[in-house]
Amino acid sequence: MSVSEMAPEVADVAGIMHGTASTEMPGTAGLGGSATVALGGNATDVRRVLLVWDAPNLDMGLGAILGGRPTAAYRPRFDALGRWLLARTAELSVGSTTRVEPEATVFTNIAPGTADVVRPWVAALRNVGYAVFAKPKIDEDSDVDSDMLAHIELRRRGAGLAGIMVASADGQAFRAPLEEIAAAGVPVQVLGFREHASWAVTSDILEFIDLEDIPGVFREPLPRVSLDSLPDEGAWLQPFRPLSALLTSRPAQGVA
Image (cartoon, rainbow, N blue to C red; front, side):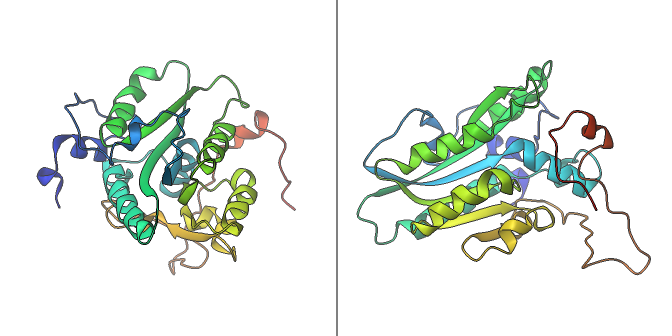
């Protein structure tokens, strides 16, 4: 399906990543109404197939692959990801004795002075059925890791999870909780870029899916370079973050 064949709101979300375009939003069909579920809600008769998208982490990972901010061709298409989530929910609902529904969530930070830039992106996500948790970026400790983990724990209560997908390369935050969920028999998938998520790629209990392997998530193949796929003439491997981050980030493991 081409962008011109999509409903206007779907085309809009495909073309917006952190507010690089503006749009006015009409109504939407959404992902089964999942975006209307408040973070505090916990219907006990519904098992959810939960998608958690760690926007700050994936933005950084995509920027490292591209060597800069993504153009339209390299922005994730959340409508395609939503259709994949719906298909996955249908698979997991087979044989279930309770109602199974998808829930698509995006967690993001809003840096000071960027609200107007990010607003169209947030509106577009909500218009195709994603619930967005937005948090002011005040300092290095005001990330959304704890909020994502709290929401996952919330959805484990009551009827529980029928499945969970976490789109993030942050193994420090997610590895142990997701392995615990998987050990309890819940299907767990980690979505991301294989270059940045070796903890999930090599896991014996977690399933890893590269975002490029989900149909339609990217319009064009990403210009990926790894040590396993170097061109004959060699290639630069871009840093994952600016060197100046050493002055402000938390202490990390040194490089031997």
